[in-house]
Image 1 (tube, rainbow, N blue to C red):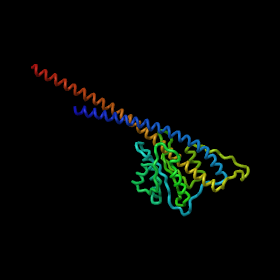
Image 2 (cartoon, helix red, strand yellow):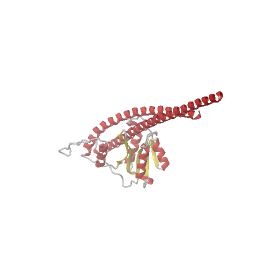
Image 3 (spheres, rainbow, N blue to C red):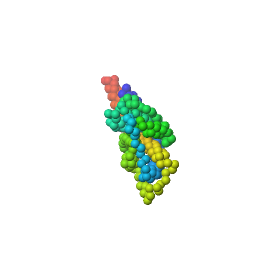
Image 4 (cartoon, helix red, strand yellow):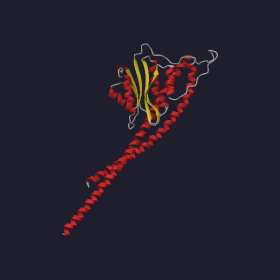
Amino acid sequence: MADIKQLKIKITSTKNIKKITSAMEVISTIKLQKVKKSAEHLRDYMNTFLGMLSSVNAYTDIFPQPSDQAKRKLAILISSEKGLCGSLNTSLFKQFESEYADHKDELDVYVIGKKGREFCARRGYSVVATHSLSDIFWAKDLSELYSFLSQAQKGGKYMEIKVWYNFFKNTMKQIPAGFQLFPLSSEKFAQFMKTLEIKIPKPEKARHTNYMKLEPTKQAIVKKAYDIMMNVIVYGAVLHNKTGEFAARMLAMKWAKDNATTIIDDLTLAYNKARQDAITKEVLEIVSAKAVIED
């Protein structure tokens, strides 16, 4: 009887776990669809903005270079706030560590997400700032990061600024990636846009060099364009990471739900067998007792 009671308790517990994982799978699916829509809207914006940016870049170089006195590196590490998303964070952290294994002393880290903060604390990285994001967020929620990036790029302290995130390839695949924001070249920028599957329209070449007039000044336009470009790239990286997080969690919860179903079936089979054995044993005892009495 003790085994039967234990099996019944296990079946009930596993059914409760299945209900929880099923609910989390549904929630992750809904959030995934919302973030995907935001990514589509960003893609439309980037197509328009980058078309204008490529036109400006055809007449003047918009990519600044680091100061000769710059000695440190800055990494923007984008992670999730919650767990239960498979190896999403672990894979990113592994690639992050392999990149900076020999440069840890000259590295500053701006961390987005609780899992990233915990990772940096364990590994002893120099964290200059942290940021938390809700599951559904807007571009304006990253305003502190935008300001920090602008100051970091102009301050002359950093010789390199890189953003680390999970690139959302599809629901089944998220790829850990690192993109160098600063210094940046036209070639690297074009390669990044190709990775995001965004086509940059080729600007029409003017017949005269003075065809395009930049107001208020060329320097002001270049500075503003570069700042917006960095913000767009970072926002896109955060969106990709969030999309990958929801996709990974949805799959993890689906696998957990399917696994719970298998366990419930096995436990139910064992429960029925144990119950049948107990009934058979009781019947045999009754028959044996009756035979003894009759004798």
